[in-house]
Image (spheres, rainbow, N blue to C red):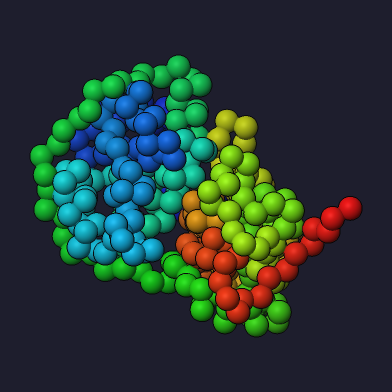
Length: 286
């Protein structure tokens, strides 16, 4: 079977087309300093925290700010935007999800991200490109792509009834409650360990190959359907702060074509600290 949507490009494609006037490369890394050490020629930098998050509220910038950001980067509505980054495209997927939620079209991801590009010995530059500012048109959010805490809470009854699905894409130790954060990320820990009741544990990395590319459509289909996460269900994915779950959201909605997939960006940092919300924990001290 083929992927449901044409939303991936190869490193070969980027090498051949990165200078095309209607192709715009956008690098989005967890490590914001990586861009300055070398990036694909012509790529602009997107800082997922400074550029996408509201400076004060625990929320995203609004659609007017997204318009201003894209205009400043010189991106036009007809441009083909290619996102890529480190961590097997965690943050590129996060940007893809957020921009899709914000109403931006013509988005694709470079399969394999920085990891694959560099492993293949392809060209990097430290030159920062400049593009004439554009006038990006008005955007309308697609609220069907995002889940809020109360919506997740209401979702749980459908999970019990088998109509809905919850996908926890964190590591098995985070899911079980053995740890409250990923290794080397103690600042993003929470008060309680465990998972949202009824969630299926499908770590994000199971969807990728060693070179950071996505597995085949057949392999991905078997992975999720094997855990009871099927296209007929209303699916919500989550992790800690939604970067890993954006990767899984991309797999489910864009590559497999599931019609109802939302990303819970509050994720475990919100749920695990919130008053009055249920959790499950399978880890017990020996």
